[in-house]
Length: 125
Image 1 (tube, helix red, strand yellow):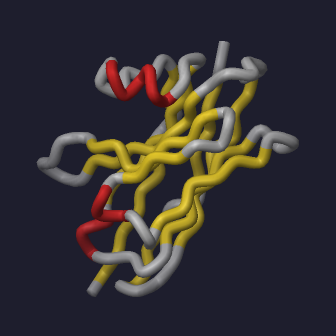
Image 2 (tube, rainbow, N blue to C red):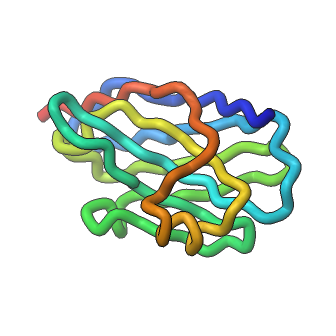
């Protein structure tokens, strides 16, 4: 079925930037939602950003204006550009995909069907 491979994590100083990538294999549906989640130590997992197949985007309030989610359909790859990084952004980031639209997933508590492995992001002061 769908396989997701996330990458691009690393260590940066506050104010720096990173771009995460998520390659999708076996993902052929024309309708879908893809997103990024993160979880820090002793914290609950939270949704960071999501994008529909029609290009509609959704963002966590604390990352609006700093993070940008995008996709390259030709390469079957999802991206998360993170600018002006803060120490509180430090977490393990996960990409996810589902055959439903993001609006439907939001009503169901963002219960994505497919998940990739985490990639660590560490932001130092």
